[in-house]
Image (cartoon, rainbow, N blue to C red):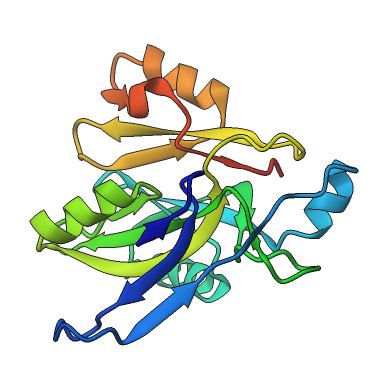
Length: 210
């Protein structure tokens, strides 16, 4: 990975078969979001709703924008082949990191990577490249599933967004993502729930409110 002075990824190489030969190289160019109006800026984003499911038997959540995955989970849960409860759409993310008008990569937009825990059936989501690399290097029970969607790493100046926080469930060791301050406050006050705020209580990324 190669980054510019603003910590934007400008190029990356991939060696799929670990033979020391580069199989793919991607180059990224960035634009800044238009400062004229928030409405126009949203029209330039490939926004998608994040749907949240709760696995009530094991106590973890699944987040997805994939309509086929949403349909599959609902169908399997209805016939009790899966144990997910559908909770709702929670916020909007970007299905792509490209400006719909110019085709350029949007500055400050980063991918959300997803891993599957083969031991528990839970998924782990992260924007943090260091965490991603640590999981790949140290946790062989996690399968990398790729980029699932994109969000803003920091609050953009010229677009109205809301922060998303990550909490660790100390019982299931799963992670809860929430932009709902009432939900976060309720969890923290509950005597029956054992959650810890992650990232020193700071947002892990920023999204668009529904």
